[in-house]
Image (cartoon, rainbow over all chains, first blue to last red; front, side):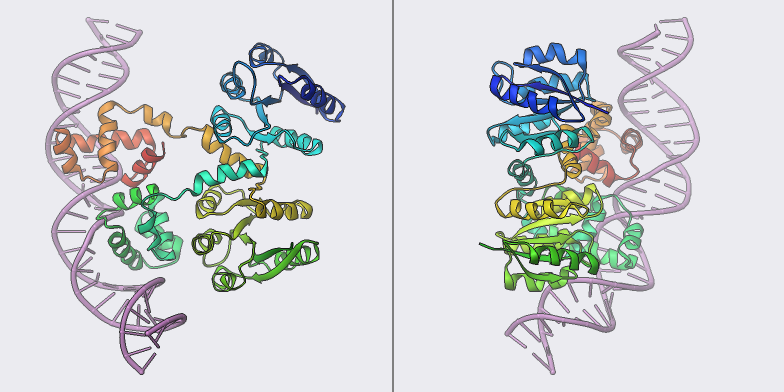
Length: 208
Length: 208
DNA sequence: ATTTTACCCGCATATTCATGCGGGGCCGGC
DNA sequence: GCCGGCCCCGCATGAATATGCGGGTAAAAT
């Protein structure tokens, strides 16, 4: 089965080289190439490709805006963003818009084809440099993390179970400890977090 | 310059094959291999490798817990998680703990070495399947947002009070309604959110 | 005009939670 | 050695929660 690929980029040179790459590669079929977002918005719904390679920095409407609109109407179409910059805003805007992958343009040809296949198969290929941005988004330390750090590993594990909504008895089973030990954790954790109820503890845990 | 790599995995077979791979690869130097998190916690601070390959599913202390502690003390050390599962919780736990990359164990050898180098150079290699989870985290504004929207204003207000840790009686006072009405809200809200406990409701509210 | 929908109130009961008081054992450091 | 931190276990009790069953009214939709 051929993967139908469309291409949106304002740079004629890039477009033609990508076009050549894709049309020559076995298993891929180029169904259209467009120089701007407006044209893509009109034409892509007609051919409904499997994967769209989308340049971020289009003149006029930005690439991610185009993705947002197309993705809303055609959720099955996958979008793979291409950019020359490692710009954070563009990256997060694209992800929010529903893009599935994000590659730097200097990605090698073979890797690009592989990425298209990845996207088509439900993956999200991403250049390591860009992935790092995303990863950092998660590890940004929160304000209340300090008190969380004072918990012992077992206590943290317990707190995690607590946040998952399990009853004491269930937590005891999952952690292979007795219900009374669980109750013991409740006290120490509450004390360390300065809370007096399960809800408060969970809130502090999720936010911290 | 050699990249110093440490290895944490409880599976002897995997450990030895990875060990062989790394020690034979030019540019890499294996500085230690450990069968569990506890040993790693003790030994890794001594050798301070550049990159640690960490299995997620360790017996006893989980891999991401180990990362959390080591990363806090030694921020320069990079962690590359290895797992057989595409489990969402493990993934996000690891990212929050400070892991930089996350690969499936079935990743090809060449790609693994490349990933180690990526991590060392500040990237965040990630298997496309796993990256998709991360990407979805952004595009899905919230899985529960839809159900949250089905709440009436009063119910939302109530849920907010619930998330603040107030008891039913306190909520009744604050909202100037009867305690029995509060109980009524409990039921309708739980039903709409498909939960069976205060904690689950609050979690869904905070995340959605 | 009838039905639906949303909202408010009430009672009863089983379960869960919060917290008081104890007791063990293991390990690492002073 | 002894102490302090961490982990584990136990009993008891009152408060809070979850959920069953009801009943009303007023506005919106059909």
